[in-house]
Image (cartoon, rainbow, N blue to C red; front, side, top):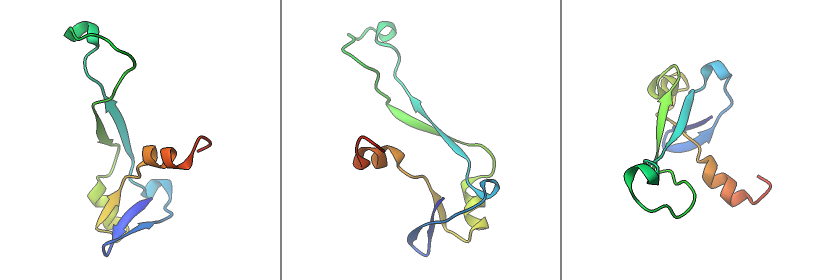
Length: 85
C-alpha cells in the first residue's frame, strides 16, 4: 500500500483488513447514437469515479501513522513496463 508520511511516499505491507479498499470505475460519455454525434471508433473514458468500500482514506492513514493513503497509477506503470507487464 502506498502512503505519504513526513512528506515522503512509502510503500508498506499491510494485512488486507488494514488496507484502504477502493474501487475506481471509468465514466463514459453517452453513446454517439444517443447524443447525435458521429461515431469514429472505439470507446473513450471521460473520467474516473472512486468508491471507498469500507473505512475512509483518512481513517486508514491514521491507522498507519501517515498523512495520506495514495492510489497507485497502475495505468502509467503498465505503459512504462512494456508489453509483458
